[in-house]
Image (tube, rainbow, N blue to C red; front, side, top):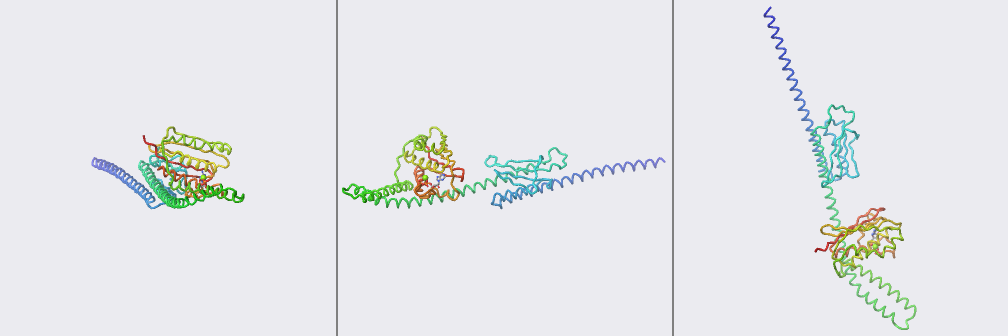
Length: 395
Ligand SMILES: Nc1ncnc2c1ncn2[C@@H]1O[C@H](COP(=O)(O)OP(=O)(O)OP(=O)(O)O)[C@@H](O)[C@H]1O
Ligand SMILES: [Mg+2]
């Protein structure tokens, strides 16, 4: 009897031990499953990051790249089927397929030079039963940061590419204008002398006694035409920087005020408000008459572009090196097709007799001869801005 009891007790002990071991094994197995699952998640995340990186390397078109990236993003998250993603950049948004928005989400900013330009977000379905307060893993937070960084890098690269293209276009444009300038200078020079002779002889002939009335009238017309042609030649010479400069220290705001006094009455008549936004004390070394000419040509164009009234905003400012003058109007604007032609001599959209198309080429020539720079930007139907940079007078 005693021995049976001992055997029974032994068996009971063994069963206990076996249960313990079984429990241990179960725990090991759970741990192993968790590690495998974590490994799987990491592989998914790395794969997602790799594909996003591939997109920015392979895709040149920004919209296409962001559309592809946003569709890849949910595949990096543990509940892929219950996830959706959105990328916003400036005024555009890109959505993953079957997009939905919910209150369970994570978001990362997209930055360009430390400025926020957009965001990338991941949403989880609201009915996803999650025991955790924070449903997103730390790794997923890092993954989203990584994706946002890749997008930021891509956007910066795209912007640099655009800037490079713009600079190349500007150089090409400046080159073309320089060639036209040389040609214009040659022509103007050749015509100047015979034209001077024509004008001189006509004026002498007009003084002859007993000149028949008809001949006097005709000579008068010849004189008018010669004066008009001389004016054009003068403008061509200014464009090609052939006219001499008389530079002095001038206060930019004062020159602007002088340049626009004649225009004020016309603005009031046409329902145009002049808004001045001046920074005080901007001193530059310039030919005040030529600069006045620049302001006149630009403001007349602005007024002509606002037939139904509007605003003419004249602002001055400066940075450490340059004075900046901007003349902005709320007029008809310039079409994309015409904007690159605006500084070309004889380019005009105005009726015969209303414009010769030399105003802006003269402005361009004057700004170049002052070692400055001029840029135009415009939105058809909204308005135009001309921005001029001129070196500040150094003390
Ligand atoms: N502020 C502006 N708004 C809209 N279009 C403009 C503006 N300034 C210039 N333009 C466009 O650029 C063209 C060229 O301007 P530019 O001043 O050289 O010549 P123009 O005004 O036509 O003639 P001109 O000045 O010789 O009398 C204009 O005909 C017009 O189409
Ligand atoms: Mg003009």
